[in-house]
Image 1 (cartoon, helix red, strand yellow):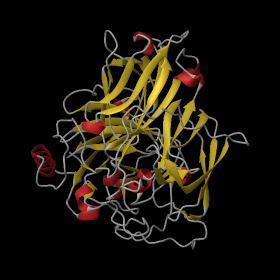
Image 2: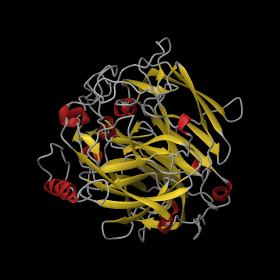
Image 3: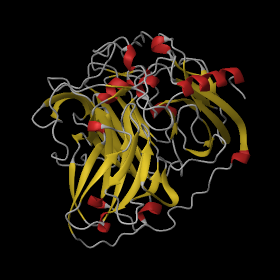
Length: 519
């Protein structure tokens, strides 16, 4: 076992199995069932579910081909009916506008920072050069700021000499040398990602290609992105979040009871609480993104369609699967994406079909509802073969690395990888471009592990093969408590410094992140 010793590994597994002694709240045990974190309770009356209309985020337009402008700014929006809520939003909306791109056609996004704090934009799932990947210290300072590198109080390294810091604006270039996929973009500022995303800095980036276009899948207004996120609200309608520093200017992290993760009691879909979608009785593609900070979901249709298997998975984080897989439910951790097709033609007109969360209770047990209103012609179908992308071969791996994700009870630096808190100056791995590696990932609690730059395949969980929800190319792995998983990936195209981290955003902000540097 490289990287950690066997005694450390067994100690972590024993602590996780007991669920005590590490100070991490668990919602419902550790058997791969729920979420690591503590719930916030909203302080005002909440609307009845299924009374707010479902909406889709607007698509960002460009006056110059594939060049886009985004202003990150504060705004006040209506999330709960009749209640004003201050947010930070891309172009002042939540979710931000959707960017739609073509595979192998570069997209350029120019970000302007009109917020009072530094920001970093990361294209999650993007195969992106280091200069545009959104490294956590590559800050865009607020307009009018001093251009010197600000300190990072509360972090091990007070400054990063390799950081590229700009004032007021920055251009990100995405070559998109990758397959069609459901990607998303969000803030990635060192130590403050959780608070910034909670305030609204997240949006979809959809990539299309010829392979996907040739398939008779639902498209247009039958292709629905669903950004699922939980939030909690104060009495004045503002978003509750337990930041140590509410200004997000100085000290990162959250109050101690929430160090395991922050959970809300209101489920939003595309920024709407428990919305209602009126749809025809035809197939729809649902691009499901878990944009919650820490909450995991087990999503199912209630009632299920006759014969079951109502959620037909066609894609994962990295694009199309080789073939469809029918599920009665899907488990989705923070940052994961599942593309599924639901045939609402299997329901009678007039049916009300609820997307439920089997991991939730009370207000978090339901997500949204579909009202099947009418019959329409449907010429779509789900082919038996979706993609012929060749699998990665673990036999070609030149290295196997072991990485332990665990709590070391050290306050703001307590969530660590192989016993180390994040430091911009330390590389946990130095893969060579053009090579394949196997990474063995080991957890104490729930840790959705995200690798920048690359997509990977899941080889195993424990002594078994990939799990039920591990098919396809992925960039985020739902690593469950006291679990070991192995993934295989290939490092191509772009040299430089990248990160991998837990996508429980409170864990990430409290140092569960590390560098890898491709050479």
